[in-house]
Length: 190
Image (cartoon, rainbow, N blue to C red; front, side, top):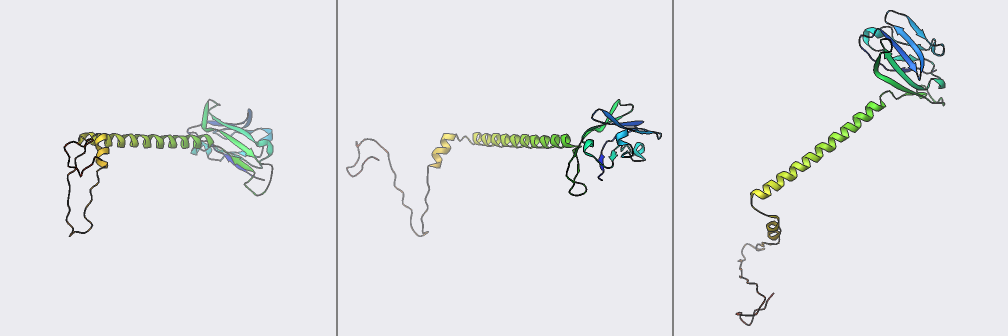
């Protein structure tokens, strides 16, 4: 037979009530009286010092298929919800090994919320860092007075250096023109 623990915590509670779906499983008062329903009699329990520690977790011994469902934890005459206030108990039909028959998804919503929040914050931070870097780059470009067109033109200029240090570099001035006017006969337009 397998046991499972459904967690619930509350400070300064005077009593605790556990419900399975809508049926009362167990009601326990601070000063010792414990009432368990017929289906859970001898199977549902709390720790002896639960009201001192604030750990009002429900232990179910000999988990059965009929135990599957939603469990809710309330304190102070069912006026305050415990933390977490609800747990889902899944009971598998196969009995392969101890511990495989029960699965408590107590914190599935908490885990999903934390995951979604972490992903959202990460995306937000990456977006803002990218925007700041783009702004910084455009600010530095405008400070040096170089426009995008100037940068494109300058990227077309190729400076070559001699392959051998002993070779002299000779430059020839070039003048672009579309016509043949006023040019020696050995020159042609580009």
